[in-house]
Image: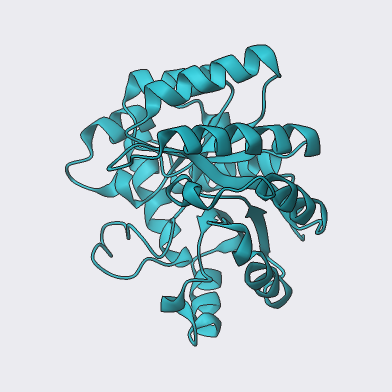
Length: 261
């Protein structure tokens, strides 16, 4: 059984000094590939070094909406240049909108639009973060699709309800579930997870955040994506093996990942 964790942050300080044991655990859990997200371009060199160390790591480059205040006129050029500099870059992001306690919505929108343009120009998918902003995001993406064309991508760590999930499925996005889907009180997320077409479903940890049940409260790590897969399989009343196979196939398709046989 093979699993792909489609969203990790193993460059964070909490993992430093423990990466060898971290890899051993993700291998034991059946994780054969990871997609490392990027919060801001200055992380690029460090993530690149991790990919040198771990051949099963692909990665993205972009600016997170909570860091949108760091956006400058030169940022788009920097992201585009970095994305084109390494064949292991499989996506732009993470980008998106986060209106939770945010007062910088205008610059978030600018940063997202520019990163969508980069993704379109380089023919790469986008990794989208969305918190308390689904309606605004839907409107922005719909306008972009109509004026500049569609961009493939994934709604990562998705927490939306059925209606919101439908919006982004209609726009062609994949939907990725994290440890949130295992939480007892995440009923609307669990309901939505049942409706996602099997060929648009992805799984992730978003580690080191949001460790799934039964590891909740611990530092999340890539091996725990197995628990996400188990819970999604239970929700959808299918086998763990089928979820693993389908989500791995989907991740390879979206991110153009070639697994070693």
